[in-house]
Amino acid sequence: LVQGAHSSTPRLLRPVRARLPRPRRSPPMLRILTYNVHGCVGGDGDYDVLRVAAVIRRSQCDIACLQEVEVNGEPRRLRSWSNKHADSQPELLAKATGLVSISFAGPLCAYTGEYARTMCEDPFDEVLIRDKECTSGFGNAVLSKFDIIETRSLVFEQDNPPLSEDYIYMDREAQPRGARAVLVDLNAASTAGDADGKADGKEAELAGERERRCCAGPEKAKEEEEEAPKKKRALLWVICTQLSHKVSRAEQRDQAEQLLSWVDKIISDHTGDNKIGVVICGDMNAAPFMPCSSYSALSGGNGWQDVWKSRGTWCKQSTYPSCCGPLCGVRLDHVFVVQRAGLAEVECTSARVFADQRQDTQAAAHSAVLVEIKVGGMEPQKEKE
Image (cartoon, rainbow, N blue to C red):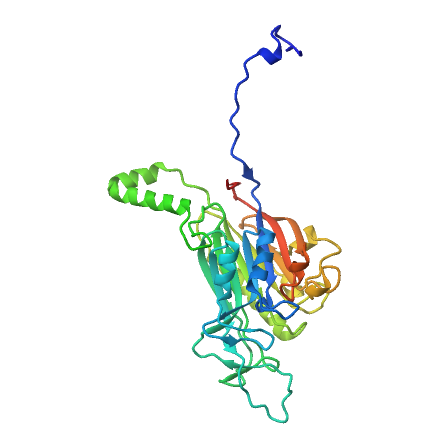
């Protein structure tokens, strides 16, 4: 027996005070995934939405920024390399991943169909039929486990008018592209339903609280609101985009400049006591070493920082083509944070190409990039039972 230093009573015979376990909390870390899903068509040519959803689910991300997402209101083939379907890919992916807050913007409203080529036209040029009813869309989507407070969309302006009112010549003119921005509060409990569309327990609890306050009368409800402490908000703008595929061309640089100005406008429009953080994710179609590209324009922006420079790896950084794995190829997919006075601090702690399994490199033409960041004011979250 071991005795205590100041007592003759054996330690094993002394009463032991029971300690209740404290609720486990995960560190205040946010996981963001940026992923060009290529219309959910893999390197093997198979169309499989659930395979893409499995990659997102395995990453355990809180927010997923997706590019080349398709929505078809009727069975159509949207791009020359995509498959015929009548799916709303954002909704299917949200249901399969549990990231049920959805924001989608498809600036390209078109589909493949019959087109009579002339003898002078390149037989390999991609020509799409304009969908004037906008039942088919191709663009960017953001899936989030947090409720989306506000959304904004950007469609890049083009220098020249369209070549046709009925067709889009994808290789001869500027392709319709844009960006989607969502504002989330990282400290607010999500009131969205689960993956099956049913309200979770927290939503039912909040609904009951609203009903109880309503029935208590305006004076009583006002007193309770004044007595309840106001929870600090951690606001974050998450921006998803895909820029022109014409590397180091004026079109790509011009879109990058429009993106910079648009983000500046979002920051300047913010009012209130709570600071905002800004994260930009997407397929910039340019590697860091390419001169006069979208990457060089964005990395030289006011306070824009590529998180890979501080937290990325020297090797295993390729995202395209995914079939070669992260060791071979180029990194076209990037994550930037904006560091300026007056904004919430956004610190990246980890950045890597998400290619842990063979399926992660087969689901799409690009591999995803997964980052972990800390946002100023973000509180730890309780782990689910």
